Image (cartoon, rainbow over all chains, first blue to last red; front, side, top):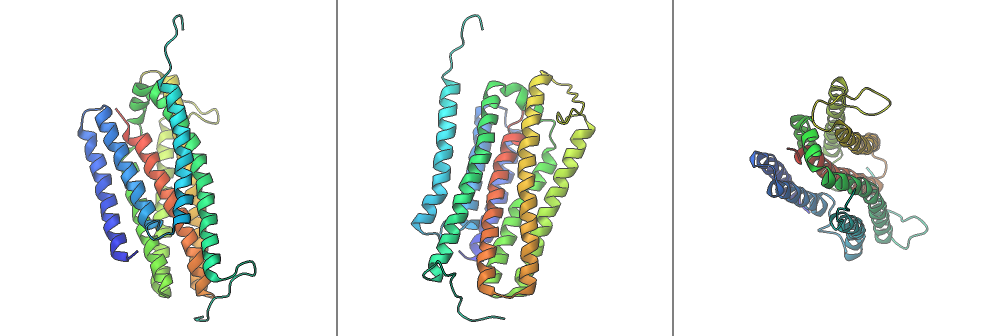
Length: 92
Length: 215
């Protein structure tokens, strides 16, 4: 991983931050929130790939890194499945 | 400056195995940290879905400008630490030290700004901890209090990690200044770099969830 690549990623990160802040001008709603969360996901991926050097890491290292995200995805998936599938009960 | 080939610790066959073990250990540690923050984010998500309008309104009471400046500072510190790692790997002690100091300074400024934000929120009676008065003008103060509980726990836990990072960076400044074993410094700075970048990633989501998902 070269210094040039790191500088380019830094510029991209600041551009993504700027874009996410610009999106605040849009009307509040699912589209705007999706843009904010999407920008955050791209920024996190850039930091992990370049600053955490996952791009240059071997398979085992990537497996360890993705393992954490894998278990985190279970946490969110099961939590949201339960939350979003609730049906309101009559009488509270 | 030492230029001798590094000798692995006795439990390792060679330096490559030692380096790999250190990296895997650090990634395993970061995975546990991810689940620590993950639990908090999952809890926040549940209440954010249930009380979307109140949480979005409460978020407008946070200082977006200071939050954005802090995000830019932290992203920049990721670059300066990467530069420090490269310089130390290339055995450029002075450059490495300079970038390490810049990273430490950026981290300290981040914490200073965060502290100022907390102070401003306390001045507006928006800190629902330690029995302090909580006074909220908007809709559903009890739900808004929940939002501010999450805000202070999430930013507080993140700031505690930042503080540890700044202390680790300070230790690295001392070690690089002394420059006893360049190979060891190389390994140490990589670990600090991984930790710092992780804290960076966590902040990106803290900032997005608390500051940007506003009304």
